[in-house]
Image (cartoon, rainbow, N blue to C red; front, side):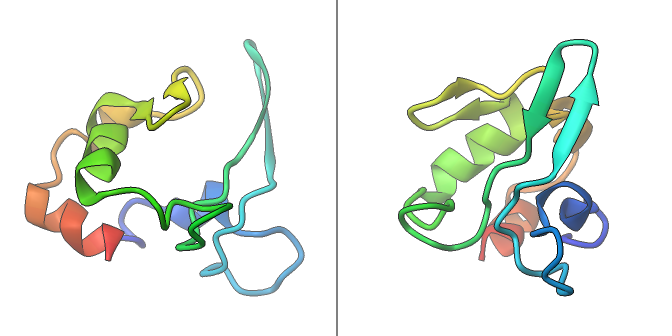
Length: 93
C-alpha cells in the first residue's frame, strides 16, 4: 500500500537517504500557494502516532485531519477512495 500510494514522494524527509523516514518537509508549489508536506511518521508528538485508526481512515478518505481540519487542496484524498478498510489498516500499521 505504501508503494502503491507513492507516499514517500511527498512525505519522505529530504536529504535523509531513506524514503521510509516520513518526517515530511518537502515543499509543493501550487496555484493555491506553497504547501509543506507533513510528518506522517509514527512519532506521537510530531507525526501521526497519536492518531487512532479511525482518524487515519477519515484523513485518507475524506481529507479531514484531527485538530487541523481540511487537508484540501494539498492532499488528493479523492485518489484514495478505493482502498478497503483492511488496506488502510495495514498502511496505518
